[in-house]
Length: 271
Image 1: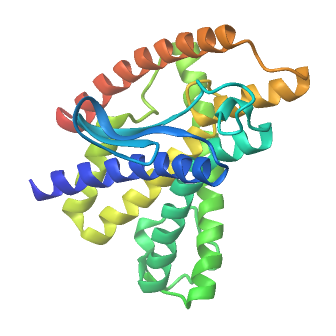
Image 2: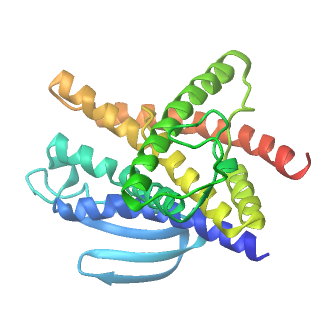
């Protein structure tokens, strides 16, 4: 039961941290923020500090930040009135937060002792053949973390390419992991050991960053794609067009999430 609670908290904190990254950069650029919420409605608790409404909701998973878009177009606090470069940085805030968390986890592991057996079998950068526990001084631990994260990025992109080919050709979701799968992996990680649990959390945080960079309209990478199109066209995509594309993709992702969840439940709990 304890590992289940820790796993839920860990994954939830990664999502909250992601949204907090957007929140911080929006604040930095002077965007009016209507609400920062933990969980999803119905609302259980709220408090207003300045212009921002902070709330805790009944569905205790995830978080969201609501940036003001209802101010006059000339108002500098209106998110829509901000330059494309500032919008892009705000969109990247969540990704950067997840990357920072993953980076800290991996640096600590390489500094205090990283069991070699936990690393992918084909990852061998600067690793002694006889070493079983990898432990480096801080500067080298940082370098090793950089190499490891680059390796994970490359392998993740290769894996995503294969996964999407399988989806579009055979409707095969076997290579994807959804929320249920992430929770199961985290729970099993903490059951094995606390250190291994945090290693899994680091990997999940990095995976969330990579996924959110994909050019899919529902996630941050999709918002960046619309900004690129805006730059190329010299004018923004029509609001209704953007909403229509986002809603269609969101519906498809919900369908995909259902298929992945069914697969994860069968694999992790009835396998």
